[in-house]
Amino acid sequence: MRVAVVGASGAVGQEFLQVLEQRRFPITELRLFGSERSAGKSASFAGRNINISKLSADAFKGIDFAFFSAGKTVSREYCPLAAKAGAVAIDNSSAFRMDPEVPLAVPEINGDQIARHQGIISVPNCTAIILCMAIWPLHRASRIARVVVSTYQAVSGAGARALTELHDQTVEVIRGRPAAPQILPHPIAFNLFSHNTAIGPDGYNEEETKVIQETRRIMSEPKLALTATCIRVPIPRAHSESINLTFEGSLSESAAREALAKAPGVQLVDDRVGNKFPMPADASGGDDVLVGRIRTDASQPAGKGLDLFACGDQLRKGAALNGVQIAEFLMKARK
Image 1 (spheres, helix red, strand yellow):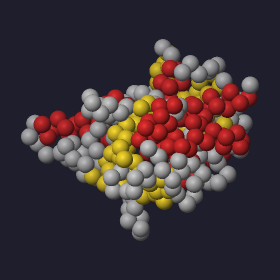
Image 2 (image 1 turned 135 degrees about the vertical axis):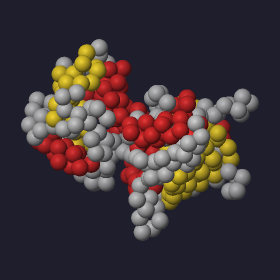
Image 3 (image 1 turned 180 degrees about the vertical axis):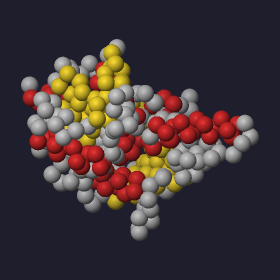
């Protein structure tokens, strides 16, 4: 396969390269693209350095799969050009996620949507992917009527410079000096704050709105009652989510554990005796979404509600891994 990665020098672009190498994606040609600032630099892949070129309109000639992670402005301009050139554009931005003509795909959940693509496929918001991976197996076991999710989102979700800022601020605070935010709107070291996206007229920030809208679309449940509170926390990598569910029927703790234990891409971590549950430190760098802390919601009628906690690496399953899995799904379907 002839592959292009757009935004190759960014955090997700680098993760795309790692995932492609680790999963031994059958690459015969690899082209890397970036901004003017990145052009001329190189990135490592399979033991060799590959130059990053400036993106151009004719960059996708002969390409089979083009992975995009350079922001929605770039995606809106270049994904259609990639599709026109015959490539499948797999886009990690928000540019096409709510376009009804573009599949919003998580292969373990709605893989049947992938094949209907018209040249562009969207990777959902990372927080929505982690949420859906955790609740979809339960929804299949007993239909979910309502979801309340609170997220604790790692700094690397805001980009490599935000991650550097967390490190630098932590050092400064430990040395007794004040944290000086430059990338994020507030000090992040030893602090947390509402997700750094704009607040809409309804009081929800953009991240919360994405989680609500995209979860409904991924699960094909446009009327699912869902509310979200998204918080940025001083964790380098892997998002965490506290999830409260209400079922139309009922679902026991044991049935929930059984459904999650069998679900692809999910790892059940639910050790009450050892007080061991999902943690971002364990999810970081991994492919599975960790789910545990499963317990009956005592505030709801018996069997109607469950609480759980999930952690997932937002750069892998929340972005690059999901994108590569989409390409693998298409290759398998072609055989």
